[in-house]
Length: 196
Image (cartoon, rainbow, N blue to C red; front, side, top):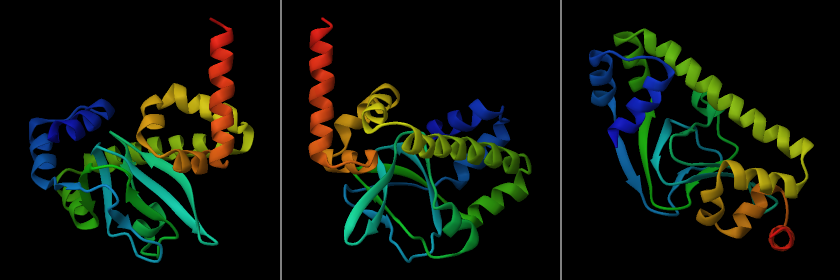
């Protein structure tokens, strides 16, 4: 599993054998049970994560109701950016929707790698920009697309996610009620049947 993170970084820029050894040395990998809460609202994030296997959900609690804003799966970073970087309390939660294996990073580990390998600062910046771009695209679809368009896009971009998370969480992520998601699924199935 260690090779997954190495492959991720190597796709951004080539790494020397020494740099690969440095990453391996600093790596802390842990597996969390389904339902484990990694971060609670009000806590200051002291860790960031890279998903090797599994799924982490980000959600907010609004008037007692959970509102899902994101799912992070294999080869994605899970970071409460504002809380982690500015040492401010998080306004959301991270939890594991299934058994999840993560690489755990801390500020200290990050700084140690930067001082040993200055090139990693650029690597981290590129990875952060990539993640930020993905998040911006998700936010944009919430403004520009209908729930059905968002669901179809999800089926295209992350088809496995539809099978991996409960329907009520998926509906919340799409900004609709579970009944509306059922109607959208039926409509899509009927359309597909009619086109056969």
